[in-house]
Length: 260
Image (cartoon, rainbow, N blue to C red; front, side, top):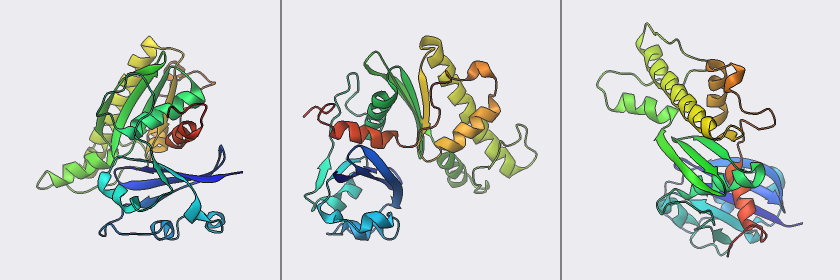
């Protein structure tokens, strides 16, 4: 069996996964590198965050199938001959400036869940990516939870920095921290609900998949905010799937689904 690595360099972190053929063994994340690009080793990039079992294998010779949306971070791997950069995914309807992380995530979703599908990717940005009838249909982008809270602190004179609340904040807050949390969280959830309802109106049998670093968090809050059964996707569909981007890379790597 062949061991190989999948990598997505995102806006704030490097996202890694270890595969043995088509079996996903483990996932972990590393921070962006901040020094000048140099001939760093994979072990140096991982530090102590990779699975210990993987470190016992000859990782220097493993293929790394990679996607990046941060070119300056990609430079750290420029000297490695084992990196196979993915630059194009054979998905009809995508536009030239569409982020490859969104494309590979949609590719993974359709390989595992089929058409139609709506992906709500919750990270630095929240993206809505929709596909049906064999092609990308469209989507939308807005600032993520932490990005919105940070922007309120950075672009005002007096508002404090607050963290995302652990539970649903009060709708009508009586202090500034709760007001910030209420405005951001309740507006994001309302926006998510709007996009889900609009998509389900056109594609009632769709899969709707939350993913990304805040995917499970917003999925949990969304279910609390909109608990009625009429707002749920069919029971045989999954709501939270953290590894769509890795399944997309795995599908691309597979000769049966990859266009060379």
